Length: 424
Image 1 (cartoon, one colour):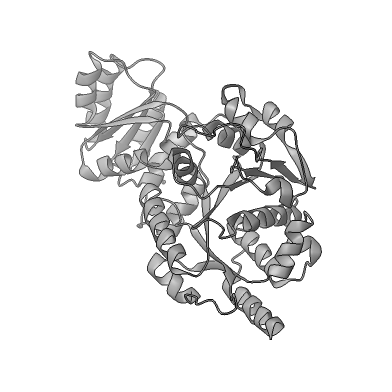
Image 2 (cartoon, rainbow, N blue to C red; image 1 turned 135 degrees about the vertical axis):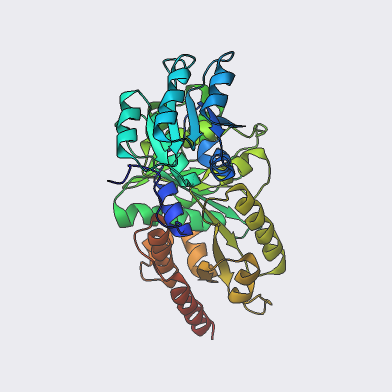
């Protein structure tokens, strides 16, 4: 007897295994899903999958009961895009019940069976009868999402780009500076296209940092969301370097920038379809659309300074995003401007401990170098590729793309030591 294609889990998957599987999945399109479950374990797995950020467009309902409950329900109701049915019956009984379901199931609906018998003959017979997939219990939310993604992802579709969102724990923490430098480093290191979007529409600084003054940018993308596609988006971009394109903020106050929570969803979708790496500079405000962006990004980088106000805000953001993204990695933490002379600071380890995370990196205070880069419209690595912060940006780029397990913290500590020696 051979293993079935999906669902058989001879061991309990680790958190890392689950996250790796989820990271490879495409978001689920706008579909309706109904499940009829006989056991609490399967019901809980489907309900957990329904709350995942990749299922935000799908509508999911979970009912008690198996195939017979579904037959009774659909006798007077239309079937959805996908029906998930759990059955603890023996193979011959399961097939008999499916005959009754065929009489009430619409031809366009897909059916997935969650069974409790590892029987290859049953799998082949179900496939012959038009069942889309047979999944062997027990199932995890990753199994559910994998099956749905494979059934409804466009055949031959290109992989989606990965979205990394930078946000500051407090205004002025330097999140934009780090965002722009890491985005530039991504493009230079790996030779893959990077789209950097400055979402701080009234006060964005990406156009200054890259010395560009485009006539169009992110505001046109947001206010024309109904016609935004890859072609339109490409017209709004301005090249900042080889493989790096900028979607700049207007940085003007001639209009109000009030948006609904889904205002940037079309932009994120179009950017993912056209670019391998999407880097978002999210302003330090808290409203519906910033919350939506942070909840749906593949990675969130939280930038903070080592003081009490930053710690409080970082803790609040960590707790909120962990709750909203239960199946994703916690936000990455970067401490910026470490080692300001005469400023009392919270030690990096003491800052990270209550947040329950390890530092991705820490950047030493160096106003001369960062100020020079900002005032000349250049990235720090362009001025000095061997500067400790430039090396840290490289480590961050490797870690955020999964290219390697960069050890950012020791290098950052070295950055602080060098900065201290320069001050002395």
